[in-house]
Image (cartoon, protein in one colour):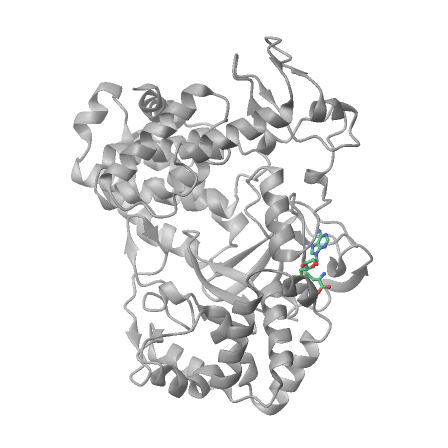
Length: 529
Ligand SMILES: C[S@@+](CC[C@H](N)C(=O)[O-])C[C@H]1O[C@@H](n2cnc3c(N)ncnc32)[C@H](O)[C@@H]1O
């Protein structure tokens, strides 16, 4: 552990071991930093990122990895592992690759799934390192009994057989299955600042951190260095809690994911009844189909408002009566499924994209499902890169505006410096800079008379203020924004800067006036037929 004095392992009867802090940790500061013990690139991204430092090779509009304008080259032998420099190649060779290279070469490009490659790296560690590692893994949860009851257990056994055979380990198949179950329970995704998942990591210390849907800490990566950072003040003796799921989702979805992937029933503060007088959690809102007033259809049985569960629910504003809140939710979810929004992970044609846009508009007009929750979040997350790729800048800008103003801002349980919010702002910045440079899109924007340069200035300032709190000072992300975007922006915006005092804070600038015009541009789009 890099800072043994900062965190202490503690056993909690309800959730096993966890990590508590040994001193007060101020909000937005670093708790731990560590290069994870074992990490591998995602199978889909192997040829795009450096397997040692995780720099991303692509730097296109929709996928911006700050500090990433790098070229990667493949290992000359296996041809399936990529590096950004000879230094990185040498480091990875010594740490892991020399033992796996021949195996990957023999597979001629058919690289096994990342959990298998990660497990092989563990099984093929050198003697004493391996013993120490097995020791550290000893008490981690595997949930092997729960996994044994799952439909896909046969796949896990098959993956374990692969890892056993390729690595040549003398461990029994049962022991390898046990290790794979530990890897599945305790590994975490590696995400770059664009919030693309680019790899998978396993580290026996970091994996002690338990879950909350209302976390006090977040994991972020500065290249290949994992940072555990406080998203609010954590008092001495308090447990560090991160979110294992997309915690912008409503409670039932989160609970389902936690049950099926991590085998526990979440009882965190965000999953418990809201005491009266406390602002309800906006993640769980639906809206009255008559007047649009939000209501929460997911009370716990023990909650005083449990009558929502079985009884008639009356809208507090227009008094529209629902026969049964459960049915209302079921109907809405059925509507989502039938409207074709259920699976939006791959948008393959203009027809599919425009179909999704029109469903999105329909659902927006229904007002039953607020735009800051599922399925809008996934729909936008998939439509935006599609329109960027198609170079349809006006639609891309409008969708980005919807994400920035109608989703992120309402998702108020997320701190303003949440990594996903920064990824969205970054994308906004890239698009605005492109539009300013090329003049594209101006005919659409004329009517709104938006000063894109002022918007850009405000967004970059917002980014500059938030990155040090999220990723830390002098992180690769911060340096990239400062050196590339700020520099480029200053070049583009000379005349505007003459009007804007460099020292002004965001609050003093009236950039938000201009931003509100983009908001109107986005909302008009949703209102169009
Ligand atoms: C990555 S491990 C965390 C460390 C784990 N507590 C241990 O002792 O090894 C994930 C597992 O911890 C347990 N866990 C984590 N957060 C929890 C929570 N909020 N409530 C109950 N169990 C939790 C679950 O069993 C989950 O599968």
